[in-house]
Image: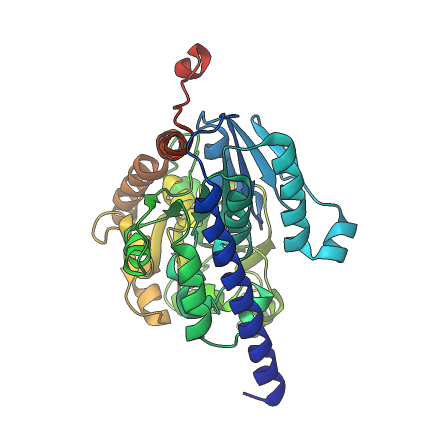
Length: 423
């Protein structure tokens, strides 16, 4: 580590520790003035950053449909219009003056004064969730942290997360980790994506409400058979080292030796895009692998693909994987995070113990060379994904848990209107 990197790490550790300790102290003030019982407004305020519309669709749509009230969404820009969602997006000048995180926080304060939401929710611990905790402490409301990436956001202080300040750590920090664990224990509710993430949160001493709620999927249409699918492999995700997109390309190269005319697509954007394009040229894959960038029609591509390959080094429960499975695309994925909550080897896909090209190509080849085997797994993958994370099931889970949390603070359970009950 050079001198510049060391100085950057010292600054990052100092700043993050100061921020987390300040947030913790602010949260301690809440019990001093908190009184049980407040007038419910049937509104929740959510702070987040949405890299793509599919992520928004998966996470915000079930909140909007969970019959808990209006969602006031503080984010960078509107994604698409949705019933029960009210956008609050700071202008560019505010982002330049205050930083994006700072602008969201101050606009969320203004929204809190105007709308008096019943609770606050933040995606990712830094900065969305800690902003929600501060606001909850100031305005005497419960705060919820959505841990979308499992231990990645917290372990070692979160140095592997995709945030410039966290990346500046350059490696794990025990001090920052201790500070962030202290803050996490102050949330009234924590939402994780799977069982291992829940166990991790419990192990760091969280004793408040802890729920497993995945993102939702809403796949329409019938199952598509082998002959209707003209793409062999598909990768969907951020083009970053943690997702190992280069391993996906290496898998295509390996398969190409025994299965002629392999066709693959990669959907997503990220800092590794140029490197991946170079690898395609180097291995002569330009006619077989398409780098499609960000897309709004991902579901249509899933329905054209046979196998979903995700050689990621970390995951919660991947929304991309859930959508792929619900479209009948068989998963061949790393055995990391909570992917094993849904992928059952020998039934609906394959979990790969080691992130090696040989392992991914071996199991992918078996699926591509045996249509009956692929069809059996494809149908089961679709059924399991819809039962696990269908839109209605996830919205119902949100309604139950959020209503329980807010009622515990306000003393009032929200009753559904006749129209909502019919829905």
